[in-house]
Length: 413
Ligand code: CA
Image (cartoon, rainbow, N blue to C red; front, side):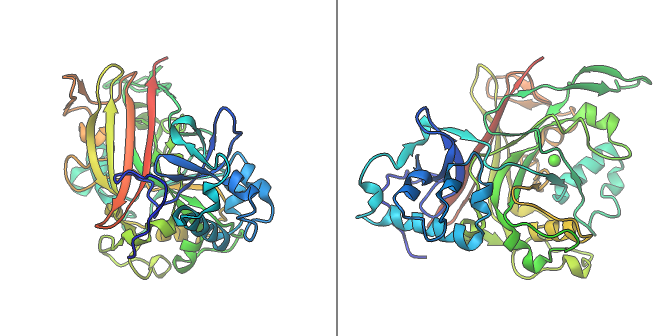
């Protein structure tokens, strides 16, 4: 790969290298919400770039850069959005770039407020990590038969709640709900005592499909705009009482947090790897060509209100048993349509070993193995004031492409 040099000062360990250039929505005290591209510790203000006439070729209607979400920008289509990304890359590498003249195309990230990047129409959550599904099966059901019979035949998922998806940094209020105390016969109503995170990644739909028309695995990548980090907050005690027979409901829909920068599939291309071997063989509509997992290192930290952060998990997106193409093909095989801005989350991403599990449920094994924090306290689930931070990046010898972070702090009732 040829090395690309930018005239912007980018720290070597920055997630937002010249090879990344993710899209998001930002504002400042003087700039209304608008489309931006992250580079190093700066943001390229696309509204200002468009004003200079530099994006006219692909986006004749400049108002799409002044929106409160990326939906209309994404609707330009991948040919246009990819070309715009490459144009920004050119503008950031050209020493005589017009962006260097005149005022204020670059904005420090420290001065910006990030917004929810897309208006989410529908949110689907999968359950595609075999390690996570096995761990949960062992705890909640039968250690000898942890995976249910359908699990290796289809990417299990459920329809989540779009209205409560919030951008990184939004506080999460501890939910109350019906909980069945251990050994009791009647439920009580109280704040969740088993509040948890779920380390996930989400992909954002970038192209509308038609009702009645399945998306094949061969076509699926064309419908995916990019990826973000995703924390699917979960109240295990509420979940455990409510989930039979129809699945997750109030234990899940009180909040999910998404990182503000959407990293495009193009930027992640160098980090594709083969996924686990799928045995038994999957049905023809779930078969696919080529490597479609991604080597993205993930970590979760918990920072108590008055103390420093403890890293509680290191995992990797490459562990996923089912990949995005299969998830989307399965989701639409019955004719269900998708729309721009829909969010499809991976499900908790656990690795094979302790230390790589993607939820407190697994890390502290249903409360039986408290973990030690650097401040000397212990955790089995989340406490009020805990700030949960998830980070993710892909890296090889030459380049780094990262997601920044998704974080949220638990506030008590
Ligand atoms: Ca989940």
